[in-house]
Structures are given as C-alpha cells and as structure tokens.
Image (cartoon, rainbow, N blue to C red):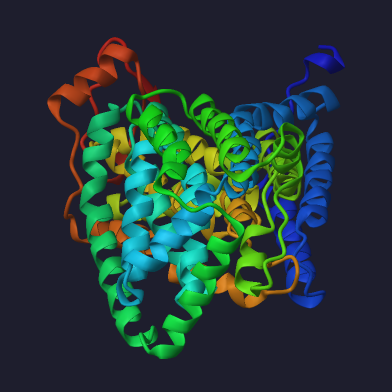
Length: 508
C-alpha cells in the first residue's frame, strides 16, 4: 500500500482536546490578561495548531485546506449578508431612513415600555426577513439610537434587540439555520418550527416581563429625560429631512421578505432605494452615496449621542468582523476535518445513555462547537449528523434534536463575542468592545430569550415534557430513506427494527 493510500488516523481524546484547550487559553490570555478584544490572532494560531495535529495524524495539506475552505464556502452567503448590511447602514443613515426611525421612535414610544417594544419589533422584522443579522443591522441600529435618547444603558438595548432578532431567526421559515437544523436531522421544516414553540414562547414571555419590569424600574420619565429627547429630535430635524416617506426603503425590504424573495437581493434593493432617497431628499450626490456605501456616513451635529450613533456603516466597517468570521470558520473546518470534534462528541456519547442526558449533551455540544469553532452553521450541522442515529436508536423523534441544536446553535451564537453571530452584533450595534468598552458585553446576560430557551429545553428533557417519541410515520421514514440507527439495546432500549433499508450504526 502506498503512502498516499494510507488513511489518516483518528485522534485520541487527549489529542483532539489539545488544539481546543490551547486555543481557549490563548483567547483567555488575549481577552482577560492583555485586555485586548481582538481574537483573530489566537484563533489563527489555533488553526495552525490544529493543522499540526492533522499532519501528525496523516492528513496532507490539500486535505486540511479543503476542510478549512469547505466550511468557509458554506458560510459565504452570511458573509455576503454582512457586506450588504454594511452598505445598508451607511446609505440608510444618509437617506434619513435611520434618523426618521429614531425621531418617530423617540416621539411615539414610552421610555418605560421601550425595551419590551424593541424586542417585539425585532422579533416581527426578523420573522419577516428570515435573518437576525439583517434585523440587527437595520431596525436594531435605529433602536440603539432611541435607547440612547431614553438614556437606557447600551447593553440593555442591545440585549432586547438580540433577544428579538434571534428569536425571529429561529422560527422563520425563511431563515437558513431554521432550514439547516431539520435538514441534517431528517425532519420536516414546519414540524421543526412547531416543535420549537414549547421552549421559545415561554422564554420570550419571561424576557418580555423582565424588559417591562426593567423599563418601569430603571427608566425615569422626568424633565431631564424629556429635555434629552428634545435635544436629540431637534438635532435630527436640523441635519436631516424627517418624513414618513423616508421609511420606504425599510418598507420595501420587509415587503420583499414577506413575498419570500431571497434575503440578499431584498436587502440590496433597500440599498438602491436608500441611495435614491438620499439623492432626492437629503441632497446627496451619486458619488456621496457610493462613499456612504463603502466607507460609511459621517456627521458632526454637536450632539454626542447622535454623532456616536450615526458615524458608522459601509462595507469597510464590516471588514474587522468578516476577518474574524473567516478565521473562526477556518478553525472550525480544521477541527472537523482532522476528526477532533467527532472524537470529542463520540466521547460524550459513551458517557450518556438516557434521553435526558443525550438531549442535554446535544444542546451542550452545539454551544461548545459555537464556543470553539466560532461558526453557528457548524454548531448545527455537526451535532445534528452525529447525534441523529442515537435518537433513532432510543426511539425518540429527532425533532428533539433539531430543537436542541437550534437552542445551542442559533440562539447561543450571539452570546459568544468571537463567534460569527457575536462579532456581528458587536460591530453592527457599535458596542465598541474593541475600543475597550467591555462593560457593553453585559448585553450577553441581558439577552434573556436567547439563553433561557436552552435552559427550558434541558428542563423539558429531564421532566419528559414536550419530548416526543418517534411516531410510526417517522419510523417508516427511517426505513424508507435508510437512516443510520445506533443499536442502543444494551442500554435498555428496544432493539430497533432496521428493516431492509435502514442502516444499523454501532453504539459509540
């Protein structure tokens, strides 16, 4: 047998954990010792360490490179969304769309119900658009301005925006992650969405109650607040034409989303209409619009709250985030190609054999993959593929798994600052973490709906509530499509009928 025909070895658990632990230590050193929120270099070193592990296991460079670029390629549509959202932010500020949203929000919304209203607005828009990132970068940006006018702490507003935006992304049939989760577990899209409601709805209601309580206990409606609001609205009127007609770019994007048009062309249509609006209503030139789309908008109103909010946007503003995402995705792809992630998951599966334990492990694995690999797509796809045969072998519906990996994948993505989701939130909402405003990382615990949902899911698993077993129709589907099924009969489960088509996978 030639050298080229020798298959790479599988890593031991200790070797599989080595690049993960070393990378986390490097991240901790950079973030907490050096107090420098630039995780790109620690992740790049982690990628190199994983490459050395791969070479030691017998992988050649083309194979490792293919693994890295495969994951990056899968996530390129999301990077494209980042680029278009950067253009939207710059152009919609110049067109007056964002200033108009802020102006009317300050006038119409009560400071006490602002946080609750922000969460609901983002949820509705995100369900319509099918993208949490698009919602955060458009409506979320305007809500940050309204929150500043009400003197609401930045991290509270960001938490409400994230809770609503990622809730909508999780249950929207237009969302890529919502389609990915049932696809990798062999489930129907709408059955998957329906099965997420028992965890998603209670978490949203609890979050809503907390935001209402926080609004009435934290925000004062006294003369100082109203003077602040008047100063901001006056400055907006002095520097922009304010009119309901300037909301047309946002209305167009939502209308295209409701018509189930693809997200990227829908968002780009908003860029085009926003540019025309800037020319016709605000007196901008065509070259100015190009500049806003590329480099962002710049203004000096004399009101610090407005200047800090509106001096942003453009493709270039997203490049820090894109560089972080590409490196994190490459690291995740290397971990998958070398078999490190699979070895770690297999070790977990050898330790848990109850449904509650497996469900908890699936949610935890999705979160850990998000934490280490920095990629929400990998955090859904990898555990979905690895755990599905075990659920079938236990006789439980893989709807439990598709819900669990959404909870640990989609919803926990914005909770991790170096993850693709967290990096985008920090950049789009202008939280200034890289500039040393680490207190704004408090948006993470304030995103109540995101982290409460997996907790509720784990509670259901251990109590048996909303944890469906496989129906006869689902079992028939396993046989019809030859689904892998792990034999769990040694652990007290009924030996599955593999039929003539279904494939028996050995227990881990």
